[in-house]
Length: 250
Image 1 (cartoon, rainbow, N blue to C red):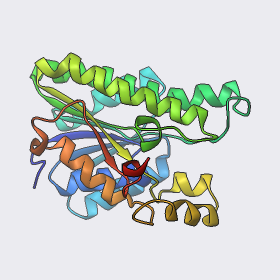
Image 2 (tube, helix red, strand yellow; image 1 turned 90 degrees about the horizontal axis):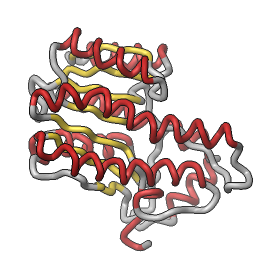
Image 3 (tube, rainbow, N blue to C red; image 1 turned 120 degrees about the vertical axis):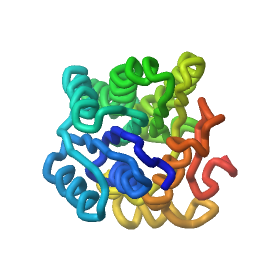
Image 4 (cartoon, rainbow, N blue to C red; image 1 turned 90 degrees about the vertical axis):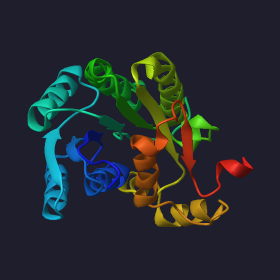
C-alpha cells in the first residue's frame, strides 16, 4: 500500500476521474472523504469502497461555496482525525467561443474549476502547515496547461488558472513541507466528456492522438496516486500530462 494511514479529501468523487481516484486512494490504504454535489452517486461510491474493505465517508459539497468547503474539512478532521491529501477533482465542461459563452456560464465554470480549487486548498492549508506536511493534487488539463483549443474559452481559461495556481502554491508552501502538483488529463472517457460530445465526435477525437484512444479514469488515478504518495517526495509544481501523446505533437 502506498497511502497507509493517510487521510484524503477527494472532490468530484461521485463519477469519472474523481471516483477512480477515491477508489484507488482507498485501495492504497487511505481513509477517504468523498465530496460531490451528487448525493446519490456519492453515497453509492462510498458504499462500493466500504464493501471492498476501504474506509470512506461521503459529504455533499459545492466547491464554489466557502462555507460548505470549511465544513467538509472540519468533518474530515472529526471523522478521521487528520488530513494529509487533497485531490481537487471537481470540474465542469462547457463549449463555446467568447461570443457564444454567457456571463452565467463563464462565472460558473470559473467558480467550480478554479475558485473551487482555491477554496479547498485555502481550507486545508492551515492544517497542513501546522503539521509541516501535505500533498495537494489539482486537475488541470492538457487543454489549458499546454495549449488551447477552439470553442472552449471558459474551460481553457479555468484550467490555465489551475495550472498557475498550482505552481504558485507549490512555491509558497514548499518550505512548509507541502507539495502541490497537478495531473493534466488528455481526453478521458468520463461522463462529463460523454455528455459534451456525441459518440461519433468522441471516436473522431480519440483517433487524432498518437495512441488513438481516450484515456481511462483509472489511468489518471494512477498518476494522481504517484503525486499524492511519498514516491513523489521531491516533486512539486509539476504538471503531469497523462494524454496518450497528445501534447508531444502539439
